[in-house]
Image 1 (cartoon, protein in one colour):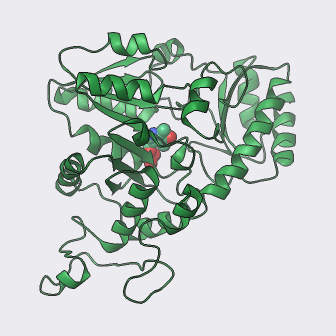
Image 2 (cartoon, protein in one colour; image 1 turned 90 degrees about the vertical axis):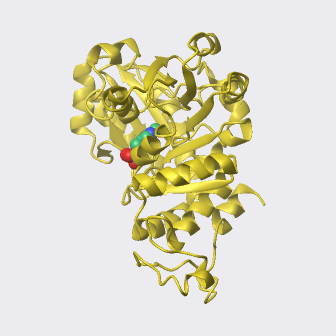
Length: 378
Ligand SMILES: *Cc1c(COP(=O)(O)O)cnc(C)c1O
């Protein structure tokens, strides 16, 4: 079935016991072991819960993996995946990776002896050149946050296979509706499901989907042992939010494309970063691996002062961290998502203090534009 149909029917689309249109909330921490076999062999909710499992099946189906695993947040999913590695291992990571991924690697996993090199993953030479005898994995994000840089999924997966490395892609920005890294040979996809997958800015959640069963077994062990699992109610809300992923993405993406091209026409906007623009350096690669440019546009203003005025005067969007909601969200990476990155590292990675990131929501694009333009001109 087409991804649009799978989004509706993936996983358990009706309750096996009653035929109800959705899976119920199994608000139970424990299960009577003498009866558990008829319900699928559950014992304790950290190890498995039927509502969470419906979500995990849906995630596996949409990404095309052997198994899905749900975690308490995107960072819980990413950190649990990083626990697959051992002290002394080395990772190659996209330079403009999500700020929280940078933080957990440089300030937490580094203390446990997991070393990371941050490289420009859009450059095949740089990635290949960063492999050392200790390298065990490559962790990339495409489109990346906040500069919407594009990494070639097929190249990274092939390099990883050749060097026997685990390949991990953060697919938060594109979602499986637009891009499925496992199909290019990636081993693991991670998500902040807090963003487009849930789509309503009311749940914090993370997902990991694994291509092969043996690796899924290892990650399931970590999920249960480490215990950063997604709660039952949030699993249910996320399943509900995901049902409208395709229509939300289509509409938000159409708005984003319109706004990106109009931003280009404003003299006070220095640069616009959006993989749908004809002159985006990663457009050819992105078009090959994804079915659309997505709904996030970043742009750099001609001064930090104008940027701060925009953040003050914008009335329609939420001025906030996060993205992927039904409402438009305007963020300032330097003081928000990437505040945990030292200023010199930010500058080196091209994240200017005059850069803003716009996650286009479901409002009328005309209204979003009118508000944005007035605030930029203020
Ligand atoms: C938000 C985000 C994360 C972290 O997810 P949380 O749900 O906030 O823990 C990871 N990667 C990307 C690309 C994100 O945007």
